[in-house]
Image 1 (cartoon, helix red, strand yellow):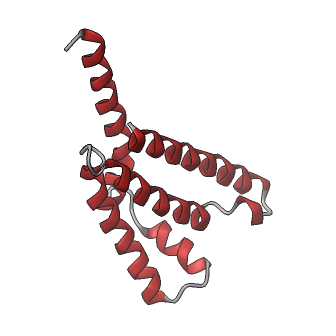
Image 2 (cartoon, helix red, strand yellow):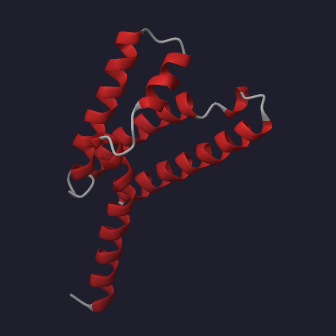
Image 3 (cartoon, rainbow, N blue to C red):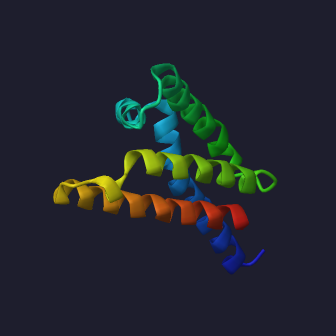
Length: 127
């Protein structure tokens, strides 16, 4: 195997690891779930469904992180995390309904960060 191929493999591994890091941090609670509870409650979900959604999302992320590194499962893990991220982005960053300009700007920035992560997931899944 030539140097170029080894370099590409190394870069893919590093890139996948960096992308997976946020999902791992979320799954193990490094990123506290308090905001997720608040965002889902704001949408009007019943408390038991909010609790189930937060813990289900954490379980999904924990299951998918290692699967992103396996050739036979990475596309499915990437698609599952994409679905999770679409829902989480809708719940957490509703810039379209925010009246306060400063909060709206924060939501817009985070909305586009999440769309960039979705792009990264799709790239990782397709490699």
